[in-house]
Image (cartoon, rainbow, N blue to C red; front, side, top):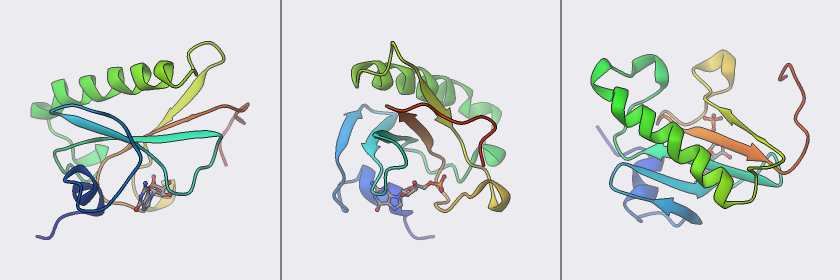
Length: 114
Ligand code: 5GP
């Protein structure tokens, strides 16, 4: 199977504005931001979506969420707040089949989401 778009970003085959990376996750700015700060945090492992994650991915997913919060703080969102979003499947509006956690911040968010 071919590499996902986001695997190509991880491997620097496609350019992206990377704000954090380590051996397990990469965080980069969304190409079409939906908020003043919009960053995607992805596992290097190409899990398609949360619905297909396995028990063996538990530590990786915990790391990803903790890093998302750390990245949000590093971008100045710690005090006013931020939203973390995982879109899973068609009804949720998922468009890239490589698990990604959206960090959205810098404006007041509506609830419930549209
Ligand atoms: P989804 O809708 O699947 O939850 O989110 C996918 C996100 O990936 C969208 O917000 C979209 O703007 C972003 N995206 C799609 N292609 C690219 C790209 O090539 N580079 C970057 N940085 N973001 C992308």
